Length: 279
Image 1 (cartoon, rainbow, N blue to C red):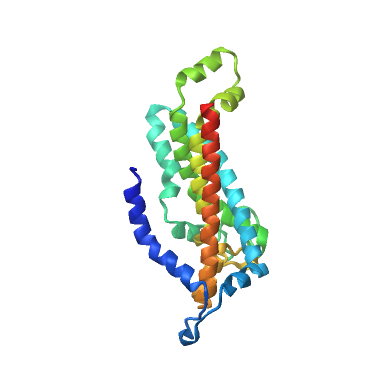
Image 2: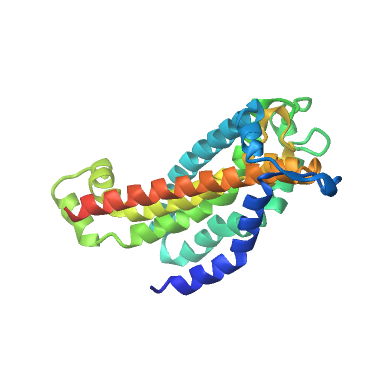
């Protein structure tokens, strides 16, 4: 009930573009030839789903989503522990330093990482003794740099949510476990993590949804070359670069459906965990 006003405003803002994309996805339409557009009964979806490029981009999107979110979850939890247990005198500076990357615009961060690894302007290759290595010349090195940029940029967001979860754990539970002789690992597995299920699920859901829609870093660093195209970059390429608004809209709708399915899976998992916790 408290959320419905914000939800209504969000629907008013996003409803028309979404409906327009769904409508255009059923037309064979190019911006260079709008007069010859015609209704093709969903043939755009058949074209997209039977094209190997769609499955390649979907596979890379899933790969970078799973990898970056997993690493961010571990690092975010570690940073949250540091921020929670830091001495009061240095707690503020430490939190500020950890959160700085999240305050930087994604495009700006992507350009910074590109210039750091580029053959002409990069300094990372010099540090590693690999001056002639083209980091953006093959799949795995491109994947590594893109992943590093994403992890560096968004780990602070995970750490904030993890910090909120850690702060809600009753101190007497940890003290009781310590008195009972539980080791640090046992306290982590049996006390800390079970009481952080809600925070972990929320962090995973938001980051997975955001990571699955990755576009900026890929567009700036590789423009989808070497098999690094994502679903979002494919939609951009079809709609903006090739001016095929019908196919581009179909890709966008499929992306929207995929994001919705991911969200539903997390909500279902959250409800299951919540019910198990009550039992």
